[in-house]
Image (cartoon, rainbow, N blue to C red):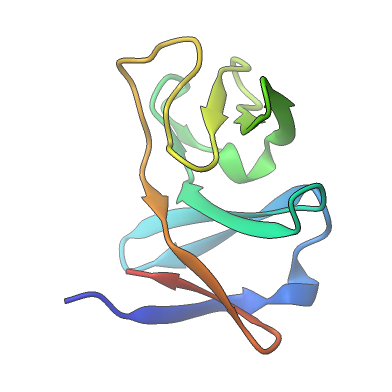
Length: 108
């Protein structure tokens, strides 16, 4: 059974950047894309760099798909699917996001 959990306020996330939140025993990176006017949530753990750092990555797009570039080795992780552009056999968790008034919630 999944449920919505409030993570932060919309004002806590600057446009085109991310924040990290601890949800249970996991870290989740939440991003706001000004271009799409949409929030995205992915796992914060970079399996290549072996560290919780993706929330500090830079948002960009390749072929109209939004990615975050890992701050460690610069791999690109698709914000919608979690797929790695450079290593398609790898992926990270993605989470459904909703905005409820001025709060950002993810489905866990």
